[in-house]
Image (cartoon, rainbow, N blue to C red; front, side):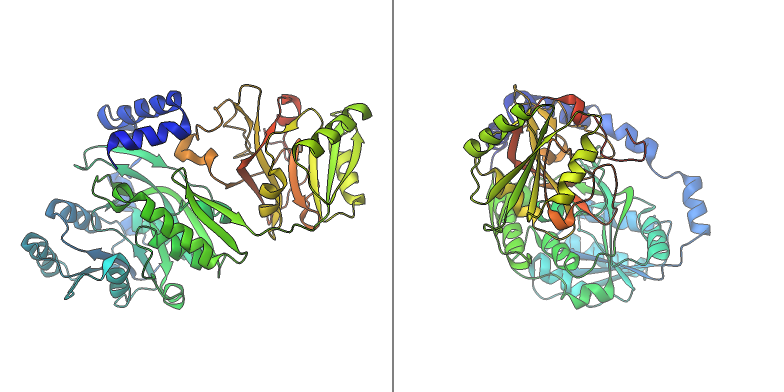
Length: 493
């Protein structure tokens, strides 16, 4: 797809105003180095690297597996240099060459192995593809943990030390770090990706874990390594399989990995192929039957959902007449065959107590909390919320809440903030997050669905539960008094 075609496709989904804004941000990063300057300030200092060398974590041997095929000499050299510069020195790098025929690539690999025995080079007879070449390297790994690395990217000097420190502290099955990108010539860094803690629903719709990924060797071999047929989303498919068998997943909140921005990358040249592979991975691995299709360059999931379950709408406002009007609007806008209502007359001060009592008295399978001041905007509203509310451990699902100008008024609490308020609905925001299903820290009672046996009373917290935001259901709502009230009882703003 040409650059102009990609631009038109992006603008169709996000709007030209937001598209031009994003182009300006990217130009600032790529041309003027707006992120690059901050990256250089944040990167590990020489003094800190020396401290790390003198205090290695008890992580044992770390194996870095690198599939290689006709890699440009300058790219491969930069990767090898980034490994030599590691402050954690107990590592090996298995470079499996899938039958390269570029003399420069072969010579560089052999020279690296001759200069440093930590580089273990294997020349395969033929190219086995991304999955096959990586599996061949995994089979030779001797470390207790394996780091996945592409042949044309680079690690920060403290990457393996930070991962090793987390391994020694928590002994997880899977670790992942933050990351950024760099220009093809490696001169500028851009697009920092600060990731959240592990989020199952976010991972299903988007491989946000990506790089740097480090996996316990035993776990990686137990799940069978990479699977053939998922090229372009092979990491995504692997992470979904690992997440299905363990919750010992740790986020290491440092930018430790830089992708090289190449026009020849599979994700840029054949995005549809990558998305279809991610869709197949979801269909193959989801415990709930699901249909997955690429829509607007994103993975769209339709889970089977409980059609016959009873839903109770707990509709609240300061007068009964307003509650009744909202009940009539709900039935007209989003009919559901097994729907009943509780009309909760309350003021803002007594809101949480009133809603908690109504939930405790309900005998329905699912609860829908609804402020009478809003209105459902999506006909398949119940389906979109039930798909996620049915899951064990989900204590609330929120649609996107929009104002009369189709700007987001609420999209879930993240780090105690409603930080996407005011963004045009459909624009997407950072990493297009608001156009994808993802986990959030909490929901607002003005519109939230929950399975009754998973309900966590408003004003309390349960760290074992999670919340979900979906952009595929919308609720027209502008009462900021309810939105701005924190759902937590710990003084967080």
